[in-house]
Length: 340
Image (cartoon, rainbow, N blue to C red; front, side, top):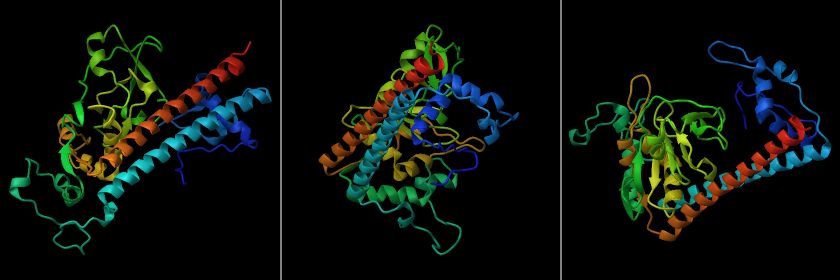
């Protein structure tokens, strides 16, 4: 794949050093050293020359190999997780006979023009005058699902979710690591182990903690800035506190949790989410919009259950990948950085 100019690449002469170098740069000490040369008042940067100056401990070969193997195995599990999600998404697409988004037949006045032109009935306005809310692709997706699904319901259906929750904004009291709950933001929900963690006080927020904490197999959805990033909460995020920029969809049960994630994470779900967007400077959606997102229930219940189970299995593999990476980081700390 092709990556942007904002990503530096390091190729190791010895492939066995790859996981070792990764672990060192991800460790707390290695990462602090890496960032000592950053510059920039608004957007911080580091350059390849800065990497060349980073000191790296030269551990015994057997220690390097042990750490490298754990990291490689961790990433193999992540690949397997991604493959399971792709398989589940393919099952959904095949069962609903979804064409590619670009191939949907949408109702336009003049299909051969560079600008899309379409009409909206007054009865369909829903109090919205912004054209983006009424894009024809949304209605085309819904009409298509009606043809091939057993039923079209919405996210707030009690068979789908227990509740949809948008956290309130509150004055945060931050504490040191180990003294509070992990707080994560929208830009971190794609990360296996969120970086730049912050911690908020248990005692100062004890009345809110139970409402704010998340649990395994809850679907998270970013609601402002970049809208529609989706994540399924893995086991090691149990008790984390997402910020008020993240909406939670708490599933009715584990028999539907993975299916919710797969549908919302698909390009069809993404279009149904983002058409609710409002705001002139910062894009926003809210929990009421999420409750009203249409979701299909499949005619073939076995396929629907298979989609769900594949998603949950993928989520479990992410947890296993996390454990292996943490094991590698522990060896890095105990046997290399802080070795006695």
